[in-house]
Length: 182
Image (cartoon, rainbow, N blue to C red; front, side, top):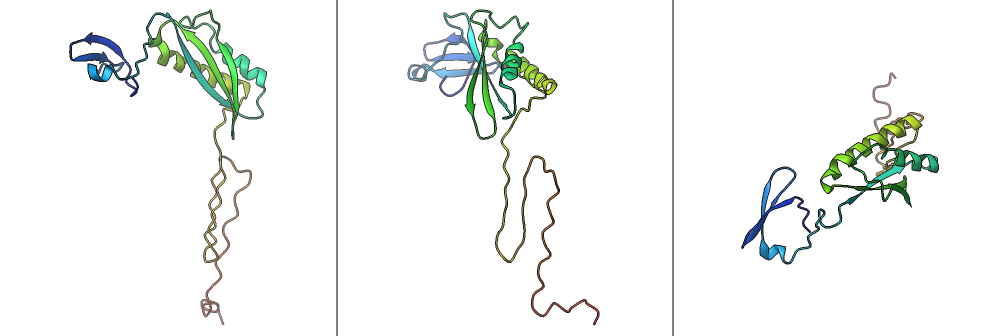
C-alpha cells in the first residue's frame, strides 16, 4: 500500500480487505481506502521481482574489483533468476562514497528480505577480504564559541595525531599572583 504496509491478501469482504503481514499481523483495510490507494502487486503476472542492493565504497577502491565482487555475491543463490542476469551499476560519486547498485531478479518477492541479507553479508565479507573500504560519511567539526572560552570539539573517525589540549585560560586581573610563592 502507499502507506508502507506489506503482506498477503487473505480475505476480500464487502466492507474491507484483510492483509496478513510478514509478522503475522492481520490488518483490516476499508475497501473505500483500497479504491483510492496505490497498491503494488508484487506477486502478479510477472513471476519475478527485482531487488536493488546499494553499496558505497571508498574513493580509492578499484572500480572493476568492486563490480566483480558485487556480481560474485550473487553466485550460487538459487532464488536469483539467471535471465536476466544480475548486473551492477555505478550510480553516483557522492560526498564520501562511490555509490553502486546491485540489481538482481528473484523468483518470489517473499524472498526479498532474506536474499538481501545474504547478499549484504557476502558483500561485506568480500570487501573485507579484498581490502575495499565500505565508506560512510565523515565530518570534522570545530567549535569556537568566542574569546572567553578556548573549547574545541573534534569529531573524526580516526586521527593520526592526538589533538592538542585546549590552552589554559588566562587568569583574570587580580588573580595572577594568587597561589604563587611571593
